[in-house]
Length: 78
Image (cartoon, rainbow, N blue to C red; front, side, top):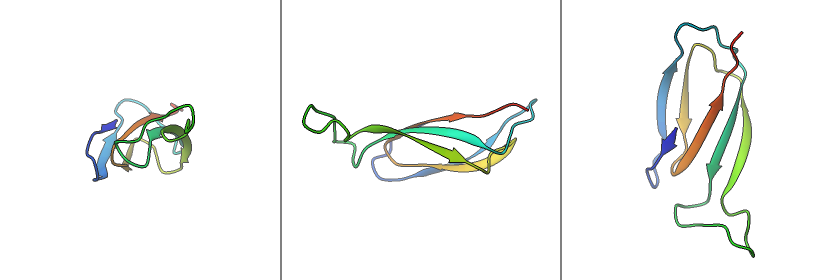
């Protein structure tokens, strides 16, 4: 998911069809403090990938994607 909005988080309902999905998922989010920040040699961590655990996934769940972010959800089929 790519949320291009500069300041507004965007929530959505996700439905996975034809598969049984585990409740626990892994999320990888690329983001920074604002859309204008960038990495440099002196500040290499302004924009970074953060890994998080989601414990309420499954076949149907809701998630709010942060403003100006790129998110990858890694779901497990059981």
